[in-house]
Length: 399
Image 1 (cartoon, rainbow, N blue to C red):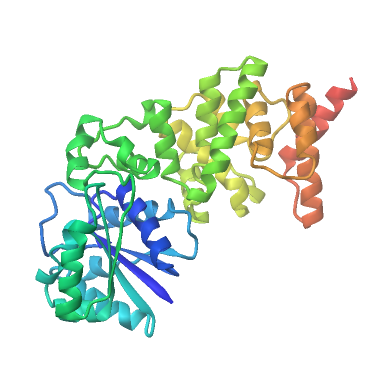
Image 2: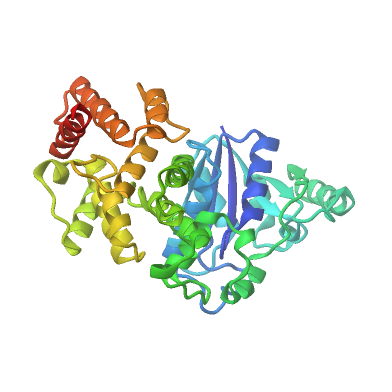
């Protein structure tokens, strides 16, 4: 198995890191790519006011997840638990023990590549792993790489692969730390990483989470979920906006509801319960036992109490999974948008899409009916709100 070792302070991790990682995976045919945030870098001190080790680890994990390479990318916190400076040779020794017999490749940018012979124990380091160096800017070229590649090969017998990354984002973490307090730099960061920075108020940012504009709200919401969920959230937002225009609802309100509707999707069971208890959200026994139901309740609580959502957004998120009898307009629109957004491929969804723009109540009735059928097929308990919604809108259409 080929394993890429990608270390760095990741303070913060940016789009340049991810572009280089993709290029290395492709060039080397890596089976695994391991991001390793440095504890105490040997070549420089962490900048004053840097995030905690735990926060850098979380940012790195969020960034790695954005690559959408399940089973390939992972984050290893070995250097964060090590006393003293984080020397790469020591980390590679641990990697050899962790993955015995596998082929290790150390990933690095041009500046690191040109000085690697000056690092601690270069002989040991270059014996343990090959080196994959990538150009950080378009100015990096074979003319820069070739002399060092030849010297390392002749002196240490090193295995060297150099990779050019066309269009690589030319930004440094140092520059980003300067830009972020000024409200700049967002475009050089994965949206979810930027959202985490806002959420944790890192690097001198001071966003009011209760008054975020739509763009910042997206970033913060995306930082709370897995990358695999983003297509659904984006699809729900755009569907909710279209439905708002069709039925005369406030489009921005519907976008906010959709952006936040799954924000707690990946919390643990206990975290859901703690949020609901903290904010006084009443739960029935079935909800207390079921994460799929709980995320709507905890998500609504955070939307209201953390992100400043009004009552219409709160109720739309609260019932977006189950529906209920007598729903308001925003509740109907989010429930339907979540069910039929373009990425969904569920039984009956095409008819639901037709009805959503023709007869809103009939669309809710069909959605509730399809949910009930699914629960019956799976042998699961039907939520009372879903049953009541079906009966309510069934009677309405019979009138």
